[in-house]
Length: 277
Image 1 (spheres, rainbow, N blue to C red):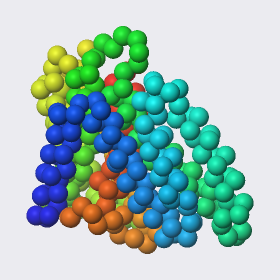
Image 2: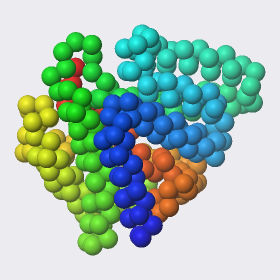
Image 3: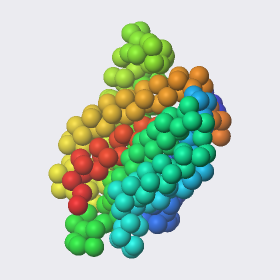
């Protein structure tokens, strides 16, 4: 537990430091780095499951797809165009670079990783990248919205862990993740609501008009529930690969995928809830 607390504090210090000192550029680079490292571990899990994805070029495409909102403003490269190019490239590669018996699995695992990780996390970049037209939220507001989303998503894990340890009795998904309980899930949602309201109150004046502390607490509910589902999806993937943790680079937590899993599904949800252009 001590290692987990230390790692969590360090990760939060990195996120806050990057957003505070490097602003939008730092947020964009951080999102792309998280996507590439998450995709690396995802492909390792797929390799362990016997799917043999194209991991190196897949990671490169994943990073570009995550950066797509920023790239589109400057070079016109949208995520959809990059995904289409990836389908063409990897369809050609499987013709001669994979065992004929596993070519479909290799192609499916590679492309699913690009959608599940790269395409989903590009919504983090969308949140902080304004369109050329008027931006009613402003740079600081967008950065605070990104922070709100990360905080609500990740503190759901904290609340679920603490509530589960304190009073967890009823298993939520015993065949997927036996340690997760309904009591833990309720605790996670409640803590996310409190964190969402607190961040909105601290960021008052910068958030969109509709995101008062009360509304932010209510919006935190679907985000927290989605974070729980996202965590279960990662558990399904790890169980298929027969691997407990996606990696060991973060003491007490596991891999980058173990830290970023909840953001994969909450990133697009948060973007739509913010009503950003």
